[in-house]
Amino acid sequence: MDTEKSKQMTISRVRIEDEEGSEKMGKPIGYYVTLEVPRLKEKDSALTEEVSKNLADELKRMVEIPIEATVLVIGLGNWNVTPDSLGPKVIEKLIVTRHLIEYMPEKFNTKDGIRPVCALAPGVLGITGIETGDIISGLVEKVKPDMIIAIDALASRSMERISTTIQITDTGVYPGSGVGNKRMGITQENMGVPVIAIGIPTVVDAATMANDTLDMLIGQFTRQAKPGSDFYKLLETLDKEEKYKLIQEVMSPFVGQLVVTPKEIDSLIDNTAKTLAGGLNLALHPGIQYNEVSTFLQ
Image (cartoon, rainbow, N blue to C red; front, top):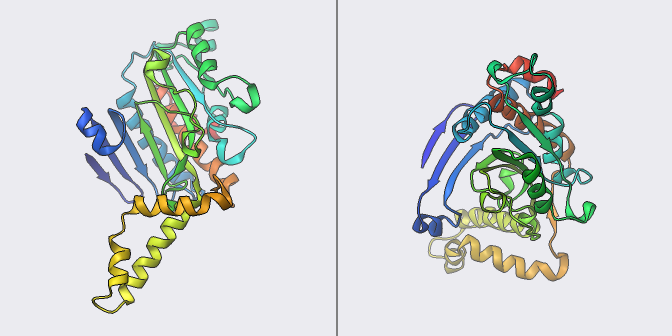
């Protein structure tokens, strides 16, 4: 694990290389990067630029393909549901160039550091009646991209991570898995080309909120408890995952699969979409500077 810290963010990089590591981490073999930016929620143009440039640097390490190679960017999610609209919002601000390079090569070409990029927001099963994975698979067969980058809103297992972390991995993504609605995976195995997934947590389930609140209460109570109190010692030794499962069992009959999002989610989605789009544009088109990219982010 490699960690890099600055005033505004912490970047963590983890590479899982074998089955033993996969079992310990509870994740597939692959490369994982997390950008933790506590102020990501704020409207700050300077911070947006800084995070976009750092995101671009991380993506460039993962997009190890020639400038002539085509990249297909997929904006997963439901544009009618604000917390789930991150993917489509990013697509709106993306610099798409595949058609320009094909039909206007005298003005747009890879020699200028412009990559052929195409993009799609395929919607969700409830809107289209078609599995999102099937739509993307058919598109891959027709367009034949060399890589897929999938953008998705995530469900967090920690309240403090809502709209403050950017997660990147080369293992792909399973749309809807965070809210108990796992669909066909957008992975290299299913699509036949490398897949990079980028996500930002936008919702948290009710059991997670209750669990985090309980942890904070336990911390307060144990600091105030008398030495030797068996009750508070028991609370401290309870495993976080065990508490989560217990709370989930108790709450499910009353609230079901309830998920919660911040009241200012509209603003948060707009801010984070600009940040992700800025990073993607810089990473995919090395010949374009941020001041040129920023005009697409308005």
